[in-house]
Length: 183
Image (cartoon, rainbow, N blue to C red):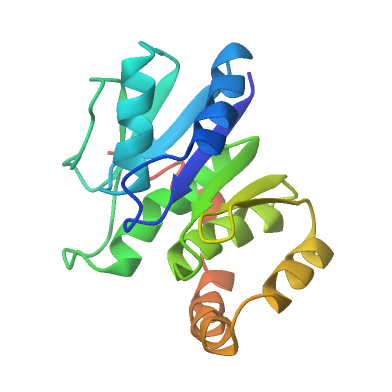
């Protein structure tokens, strides 16, 4: 079964017609959707899939409480070693989704480091990722680190620098072991 990790920025609360068409294609192909529980893109995707009455959805949550599960779908609560609900706390579920997904679809606001880290997590696992850049209304397909580097060159230097700091920690994460840490 093909699983697609759909994610994106918390600043984006509405899905464009282009994004909705891409999701419609996934629904038509009966792809299994892995989505997080955050406000923003996660909640917008959940709402859209609920409106379509799509059932092949699994909502991933960090810790034991899901913030959003609009459709009442099955949830995956991922154990987290910290009680501090910060960037790293929520990144735990993202790592597992990237590990389990067959491919990714990221809806990016042009500045979210978290969204770009999800792209990178998928690329590191040799998985294709489609990125929709909301400000430019453009799709990019990335399949390998060369594609990633080309994509990154289009980003502002300050964003690349912020991302670099996060990727240092990310390289040391042990995503495969997360499957053993489910609540």
